[in-house]
Length: 414
Image (cartoon, rainbow, N blue to C red):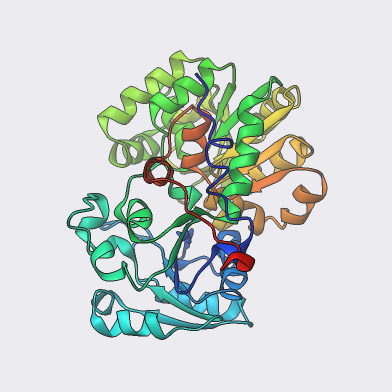
């Protein structure tokens, strides 16, 4: 059975902000941004999207915003203070302040929230600083304890994180009447169109993480053709028995676990395509194209898919009415742009981009406006979108449904 949420959440959609939002409103967003040269991307599309949404919501009610960046132990894990500074630059109609982690669960912050007025926003620090973020229990949740009573409505507008049952998502309907946000409703609608379409589909997956194998299997079982690039493409090629040279073989061994290698072998069994050549950056500073069969003799690092791969992928992808890109195909931050070149060859109606890093590749290649003008769609949801296309569920939305839709009182009736 296909898991569609559109009809089920019709009473949860945030469609009339003036009548639905009340008093201080707690909003969960996802401004987890790509990392470039040791800091967050300053021109990320995801931040621009949520800056616009924050201004919209705050024109009706004061806001408290939840968000995360990275995971503990990863290079991109950091405070939300840089995000706060970006929000200040991207908004001019609201007053934004920042609450550091040690100040969140305090009476001082609770009092500040109760005194907020429309046009005022408090951005809370990274929710992943707290151990309880990955283990939600409504009976002990600090979020519920501190914010229930002072928060009057909640909005779950963090669709990129919907495949997770993190505490900052699950707690919302336990605090106050909770709605599904405007961006999330838009992206959910687009995903359901893709999911329910009978048109031929292709998924180009890249980046540095292999999507859950159970999700990929379902997507491909539904008749979607698969293509890979980025580190995922290298992993699948390696799992297919190809020697990528000592440098790249060793890097993949450090980057991926044995389970991920085993999962990649299952991807190979699904007849998913991997690159047939690569762009390699050698120790002497030379950039060159190398065929897959010649990689065993290479000492340089793979930085992009090769020109021949672009040619083959473009030809195959043009035969599909729906083309989904998830994850970069090369190190776009350093100017390796064959992913952009492939995009130019498959642009048009039916092209979908999923996720923060994928959309950032378009920003770097100055293709955002071109994609939109040609009928393509750029969605900030990434892993969550693929999870849903695989007929997966969204725990935090299910929790709102379980507790019941908010009761809206029209202004005329109050």
